[in-house]
Length: 103
Image: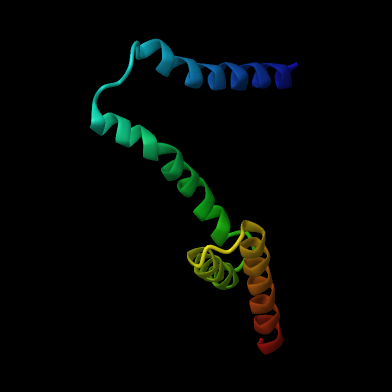
C-alpha cells in the first residue's frame, strides 16, 4: 500500500510543479529580462542533470572525460547526433581498454 502512496505523492508533486506557474502568472510576461531567463532555464537544468551523470557513467572519470572531450569536439564540427554519441562511446571504450592494458 505504501508504494501507491509514494506514486500519488510523486504525481501530485509533478502536477503542482507544472500548474503553479500557470496559476501564478496571468497574462503575457512583458519583461525582456524574465523572458530571457525563462528561455535559458531548460538548457541550464538539462546541463545540471547531464554533466554529473556523464562523468560517473563509466565508473572512471578519466575515460568519461575522454568521451566528453571527443563529444564536444565532434559537436563543435556540427556532426550528426548519432555520430557524436558513437564517437564519444568509442573513445571512452578505447580509453578504458588502453588503461586496463597498461595497468
